[in-house]
Length: 185
Image (cartoon, rainbow, N blue to C red; front, side):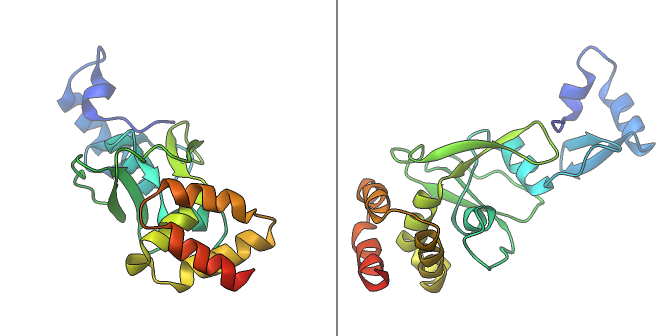
C-alpha cells in the first residue's frame, strides 16, 4: 500500500473536503502532514514512507543503513536519509535526518528496496558504501560506529578490495578506510 495525498485520493472520486470528512470519520490514517494510509493498512515504517513520498530519490544512509544490514548495535534516533546536494530537504514531521550527498556520486552503490508492509520503494546504500560513508563522515557518526561495522562486515566475509574500490570513488575516504583495514587485518 502506498500513502496517498488528498489530491491523489480524490482524483475522479469526489472533493478534497469529502476526503477530509472520510479521514475524520476514521477511513484514513494520517501518517504525516498531507500523507494518509487507509485505516487497517498493514504496519509499515512511517518515516521511510514519508521520506520516499516526499523525495523519490531518498536513500537510507549512514547509521540507519548499518542498522538495516545488522552491522551495528546502535539504534538510530532518526532515519538517516540522503538526497542529492542542491535539492531542498522537505519539511517533515517524522524523525528524519536529511543529509546532502554530492550529486556526482549519489547513485554509486545505491539499491532500491521495498518498504516492509508497503508496496513503496526507497533507496538504500550497499553495506560497502555505508561503511565508507561512515568513515568519511566520522565527525557526525563517531569513529567507533564505522570501525565496529567494518569488523562485523569483515567477519561475515567482506573483501577489503571491494571496500577500497568504493572508497576510491568517494572523496576524503581512502585514507581512513585504508588505515582501519590495516589495523583490523
